Image 1 (cartoon, rainbow, N blue to C red):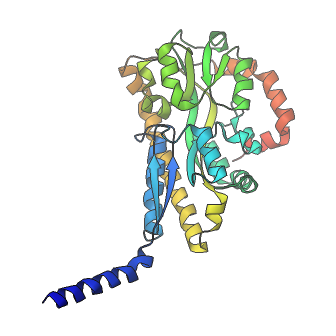
Image 2 (cartoon, rainbow, N blue to C red):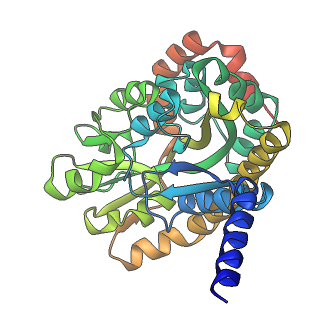
Image 3 (cartoon, helix red, strand yellow):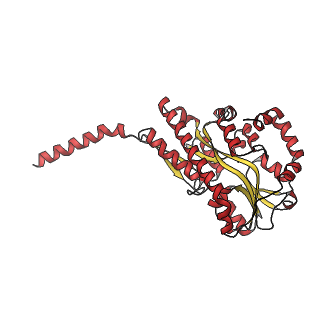
Length: 325
């Protein structure tokens, strides 16, 4: 009896060893700077689920939230270096790695979300995704952060006159910083995980972000005023370390790209939901909201800066985006 048990045990062990290679799983990491219950959280959760399903469980993506692996710039840097396989980030720090993407951050460039999504999903977006290849990345898909709005603890913002002298946290993005300085804002570049504490302690007066970020980050707890300036459209991007991507089989490369596209779809649906509900939700939590901002005056105030951007990026390139149908 004892010998039979032993033989059975050896047989099971050998069977498991034989099955081992078939069960081999590669684990990768992906991170965001904001909460899991957010438009970005929905994106990476969807991506992780889709990758696992589409590769038959051979690839597993671990998800990290709230800047637990560092801010956006640090995460993108880690992906470039290969110490982290994947990251999902707003476009904020991206121009520091792929300068050609700066053009997307020009204020008042996009008419609305439909226009921005059409540009990013079309030839212009694909041309920009291809620019990542030579920088150590595979850019899998454009996704969305949303139109950025201003919040602060000092006063209502109705026009550019009200932004003068406000100390506002900005992303580490050269285009944003140049434009906001032109509005008289005292710009304070800062990684996102530090922002709530900086607002709470009064290190900065305000910040600017899309409604999905403002709600998920609970900025209503430390900011009194919200103005729907919609001054910049903020994409997100899902990037992968190029060497890690190149090691995938052709079939798995397709699986990762399709998973990223599914993540974008879920992410944009959540942005639409947050945009629809965000103002009422923030008002209910005590924020004072200015909905009818004098956008024409903002555009006029930025005329000289926009002329600089036309020199920098080429008027034809900006018009190609502005006029895209």
